[in-house]
Length: 385
Image (cartoon, rainbow, N blue to C red; front, side, top):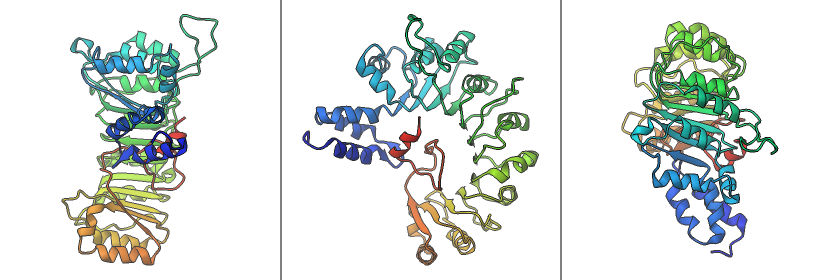
């Protein structure tokens, strides 16, 4: 095994990397023990996405990460260079959690970090001391103990995922102020804190909302992104009070993702005449997929496996949409009585029928899209720079 060409080892490991959209860390770890020839390429992939979770401060796992990314060693600097996505649980250190000072230390070790995902508990806001240090990381800087050294390039985070924090916490705004480079924003928690007075300069390409904030907050978040926003996901259908905002951003949207399809969804679609992709997680058995934008190239309907797959609606949409290239469904649709009809229709129209096993809750890679659908792939790491 150790005599295999490096390129072949890389191909094997990259093939193993994802299992239903989730990194297969156990297989990669096993591969890293095959031989010395496998260790370095496996470790590179193991460090692409790192999770530092609850009650970690001072534990063996925390210390192992600090040792592995020690900036004073060549190996530590090398491994840290490969980290593209980092998920951290930030809490109160009295409860053995990593706190905001640990956050600064960890981020200082990840010079090429692309995506930061945070779970915050027990911390209302980042301290002034912490925000100043993060600001320093986000601008060209020299090591604090060596003014004669070359400047370090700024830590330019492009994707921010806020999975939890207090409803009145200003942490979202603090992070957006530190990193105006953010183009992909995922908000997985309710945000009720009024927006700050400073005008945003970040320009979003994608916005994912697992909770839809109030009009004033959403208007502030999008105030500098009307011309750049291309992908939007709403878990909860936006209310009528957001119609003016949808009217402003809708014509520029290329992809719209909705949790459910119903009367409100048909209204929202009217604001989005140029969509190339429509993703519906839960189709209705009562409402047909009517009046879809004729520009659609990818239609994804990912009903829960135990539910009616509503293939009749999908078949009707495939017949109607002339530019459709790809239809994505969950693999369980093969058990539906109408699957044979759908399969034959797609074949006759030269539409690819893709049966996906990736759970709907797995986040896509936060990268720019040429053509939809955007799949999870190790090839996307090259775009995360």
